[in-house]
Amino acid sequence: MSVVSDPTFRDGVRAGIPYAVAAILLGISFGVLAEPVMGSVAPIVMSAALFAGSAQFAATAVLGAGGGAAAAILAGILLNARYGPMGIAIAPSLRGGRARRAAAGLAMIDFSWAAANRGGGRFDIAFMLGATLPSYPMWVVGTAIGVLAGDLIGDPEALGLDALFPAFFLALLVQGELRPGPPAVAAGLGAALALVLVPFVPAGIPIIAASAAALVGLWHRPEGGP
Amino acid sequence: MTEVWVTIAVLTVATALIRASGPVLLGGRELPPRMLDVIALLAPALLAALVVVETFSAPAGGELEVDARVLGVGAAGVVLARGGSALPAVAFAAVVTALARAIAGA
Image (cartoon, rainbow over all chains, first blue to last red; front, side, top):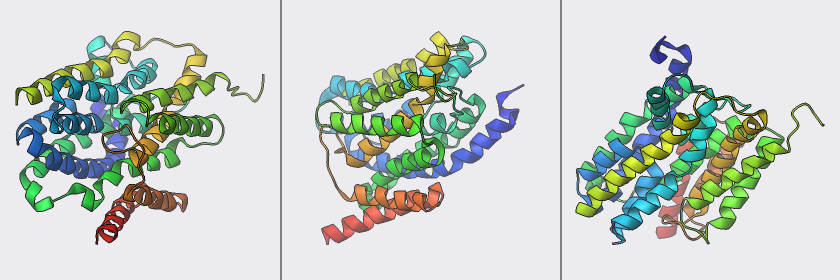
């Protein structure tokens, strides 16, 4: 059966639409900020090829500050390193050959990955693919709008667009993941670890380090005691 | 301009490798139950870290900063705590952040 005819894929697409609205706005702000640094074609190519918001903002900021390609690449890789543990997390739920599994990995974004988490270490892959789908064209189109209409839009920060991502992740956390017990402990610990590390390490590292908070799962006894 | 294209090309390849590595190397294999217990907690840990880092860290990273974003994300938190759904909460975050910046800049 093709994944597209899977009903959970369609559920995923539906769940992905609100995030796609945020993605187009974020794409616009990326286009506005990137155009003076990279010209008008490169930001759109970057959004289409990379599809990774925070890494694109970080690499562009480094290039804009004259930091050079090596530093920009390093910043982007650090911000995307979280996809390593995220990919390991979905691995047991994947079926099919290598190319198919690789494609599922490429379709991971923070939102769809978290929304496809079904607990107990399982992920609904068809749902994840569906939830990613609306965001991809919106991210690229948003970037193009930002590049072309930057002068009309002005400063994306004045519109509060930089609050969209954290607010969306907060919604995902509160509505999907913040169950009492180990999930709440892991969330609190992950937030604290990341916050403490921000002043001391390059961007991206605090997020990866926070994945260590998931190790509280080793102490967890699901059946209520040893 | 070369630097821009080199950055885009290398980052695209590196990101694809990072995203695909777990699925390709470990895909379809059964993992021990204790590892699944850990994987189950990755989503709350990573999401909470993304929330605090994107709320409190300076845009280029490296330092903590408290600006209008904190008010906006806090406002979204209030909407969510009162049972509101995601999209209104997120929209409220942007509006509150923009208003706070307008007032501070006025």
